[in-house]
Length: 355
Image 1 (spheres, rainbow, N blue to C red):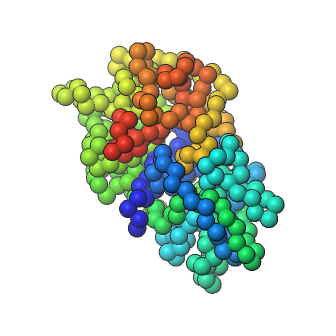
Image 2 (cartoon, rainbow, N blue to C red):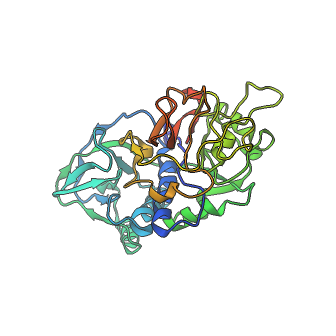
Image 3 (cartoon, rainbow, N blue to C red):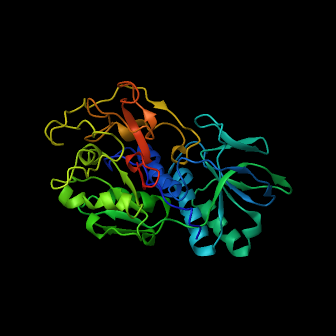
C-alpha cells in the first residue's frame, strides 16, 4: 500500500431513478471520486513515462458511454489491483481541455483519465482477466511492440475503504453504482457516522437529513482522522448549516465560510432558500483534476431531485481553496453557484477532502 494513496470521495446525484444514460454518467463520477481520493486531489506531480509495448490501454473516453464502457473499467481495475496485485497507471495530461486527449497512440486519442495496465505485470492469468472484462464491454487495446510516453499522474496500487451511510435507508442509491461497475460488496461497508474511525477512507452520504446529533461525528472524521466525505442532493445544504449546539465553533460548513443557501425554506435552520433550478448552461473548470476525469456533461444527472445546485449564504463565500469544478450561471466568484464542488475541509490542507 502506498501511504500517499488517500481517497477523495465521489460524485453522484440525489435520485436513483434517472434515465439509464444519466445514471451511467453520475455513477461513474462516484466511482471516479473513489479512485481520485487515492491520490492528492489538488497536486499534480506527473511525470512523462515510457510505457512498454504489449501494455493494455483502457479506453475511458469511448463513445457512447454506457454501463459497459463507462463503469465496467472500474470493476476491471479493482479486480486487477485487488486480486492480481497489478498496479494501474493513471494517465492525465495536465494541459488538456475538457474531454481532451490525455495521449495519442496509434493515431487514436485517449481521454477521460486513461488507465494503462503495464506490460510487465501481464501474465497468462492477467491476460485471461482482461479478456473477461472485454466480454463485459470494456473497451481497450494492447499496445504493439515498442513504447509510448503518456503523462502518468500516478500509479494506483490499492482501493480505499468506503463506508456508505445507511442511516436513512437510501444506501441502494450508491450500492447500485458499484454493482453496475462490477465492483464487489467487499469494496465497501454500510454504517452510520458514529461508527467512523481512522480505518475508513471515505464516508458517502447518499440522501439524508443530517443533524449535529447524527452527523456531528463527521467533524472529527475530517479533522482528526483525515477522512474524506462525498455528499449529494439536499444533504449538502443541510449539512453545511449544521453546528454543535454546545460548542458553536464546530460546524459542518466544510466548503463554505458561513454555510449554503437551503434547498427549501425552513429546512436548514435560518438559512434562506435558493431557487429550485440553477442558471444554465454550466461551466466546466480544472479539466486535469482527478475528480474531473469524466466524459461529457453532468446533464440530467443534476437536473432532478430536491436540490440541483449549491450557492453560499448571503454574506458568505466558498473558501479560497474550494474548487468549483462545475459552475452555474448564478452569482459571481467567490459566491457563485456550483454543481460539483470539492476541497480540503475548511480550506485546511491538513484535513480530509469533501465533495
